Length: 303
Ligand code: PMP
Image (tube, rainbow, N blue to C red):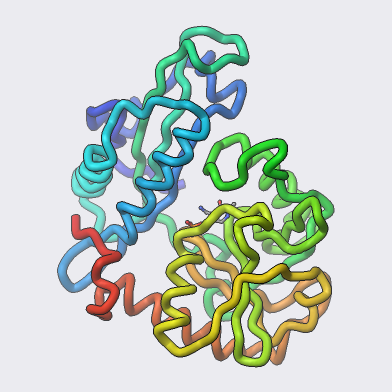
């Protein structure tokens, strides 16, 4: 990865190479950390964090689920994010706040240990590869199922969930694909390993509801609002695996992946490979994050 200069750790900006934790940190052993991924975009009015308050709100919800005391208010966290971007002098970057159960007691019970927090920022280009945004990605349906709410809460962005995502990603990459699409334990489509998924059929877009064990993505919610603004009908509905193969278009949404077309699933080419609706949503998303659409300026927090 590309190193930056400063990382915010428990209220202080420390040098990148000194942002360290003890090897017996609880989170390292038991996955007891909650985190966020945001992007800061270059705009004509300076760097702006996309939906900062919504990401902080999700971090707070994730921590509540795991009874972690963040020790900072949402406002303090938002200020710290902006301070970190500023300290690194980035015009645009990816932002990774993480709250983790720290070093202290080593048993499974996280409650005796303090929660610590850090915020790192770095340059991160197209997450699914250089050509992904324009040409789309090749996917397989994973043999792994998305974590069930009966075992781990999918809506909490907890590090432990990514052991499941990691298995699906390994399988896809080893088989020569760019990304995995993961079904839930009912056998319907859930999401990617770090992205939500949308199907386009006959001019209507649909995406699985929260009950499909998805993470409620902030990009997903943005796409739903942008589609409405463009006059494109959007439905929340169960999606069957076979409906992926016969879709006119498919795309992923996520902070890292932004809006990425999917050009192939399990060896089936999707639609005619031109993705007109996906491209339309990509360009309206781009206009919003670059501060060129006043209607959605509420989503930008200038650094
Ligand atoms: N699903 C998973 C499992 C993710 O990790 C992410 C990335 N945070 C998403 C969906 C997309 O969420 P967002 O749009 O908020 O980045």
